[in-house]
Image (cartoon, rainbow, N blue to C red; front, side):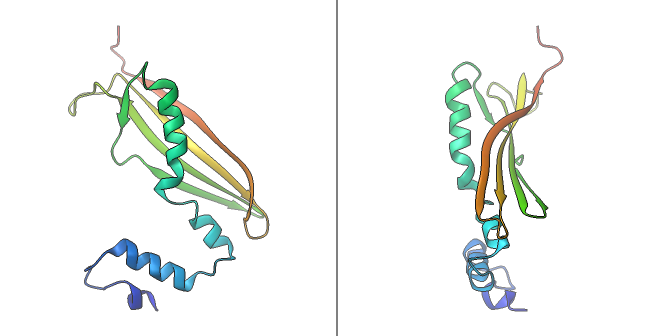
Length: 136
């Protein structure tokens, strides 16, 4: 196991850089796993987030729901679907009360090919919208 050749067992140092070095060393660039992992980082969601913010934030100010970012990866034969999802909530929400509204948005990336190296489609959707029950 070469993992601890790169990542300090005692937890010292910058774990993200250690893990990056480990992955760069053990995963070839031209493989399915590398193509999937290249889609599993926070920077990839920024354009989707900013397009949603541009469209609705002035009318319905919102903020992040902490800890709600998820990445799901679905693999079948020659297709891989990577779904980033994030929940936003009304900006006027206080920490101890239910927000007036919340919504979940998703960035969906579909790859195809024997190495998942062909981009089939990319789109953003809002699959879930919730409102507080006692709104006037």
